[in-house]
Length: 129
Image: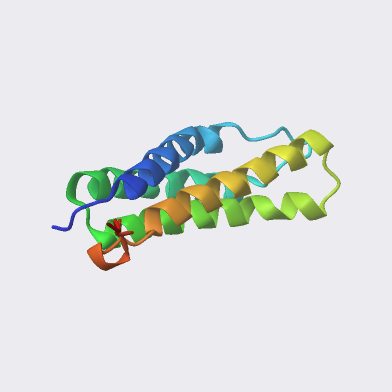
């Protein structure tokens, strides 16, 4: 059992909220005439969100590096399924939301995967007399 840093816990919290918001995405399928992601992508996002949410809970409770990596990986895969919206004819609001998804994913993943600072890297105050 390793110790999770504050930075990692913040990343896990951000990622957990994002993943929890993605769990019901399979139930939000667009109708046949509307533009939107295919049902298979929505189901994959829901499955990845559940896996990532379990990994976030395990990582937050135990601090295991493998759980942190699994949570970050599921975040990254969900963001990758949203990237095609940049290249398809969708409204600008959708592109803005996809951009926000990518930014939240990057921030949460960087915070989760940030290594702990060692004592040698901490700044030392030197006073001269």
